[in-house]
Length: 195
Image 1 (cartoon, helix red, strand yellow):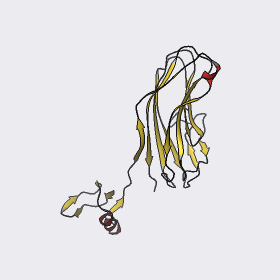
Image 2: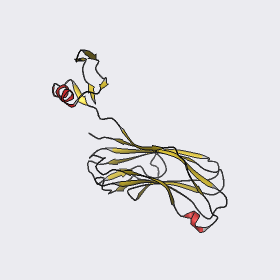
Image 3: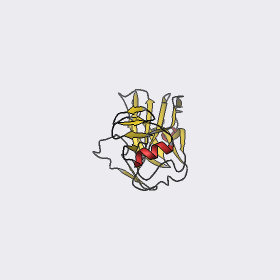
Image 4: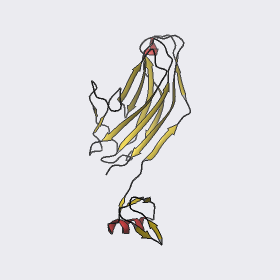
């Protein structure tokens, strides 16, 4: 996949500057070497499902322990030195006084844990997990918000992205809770190649 820097004719077809197209490797390399195009890696969907997963409370102490509803395996080597994962989560929760926490772990490290109570019936979040010019060093906007860092500093992790690792979607209540359900409607996990 390449992006044209100037208006260019290829095999009889005209491509305006800024357009993106896909050719065979040899043609793309020739156009890049001529300086009329650049490599344009596009995001890749690693996994997406809206099958729906439900956790029901048992009115017992175990309600306050995280339970993983589903996991996505990111194949080792997917991420490059400066690439990132974009993780989207979509939840339905009961409007009740109990505190419900929806979390995401990446490679065993918690990168999001949003606690909601009365007045909320759903949550859709997006989280970026990026390699910092390294295959084993990341910083992630942590816990509660995509872009606001009032009290939650970036979370530093050292996950080896050269080997398979999981993205886990999990939830819990703050205490034993009677007759409630937390539903993960679905998720998307995208990989954005770095430069």
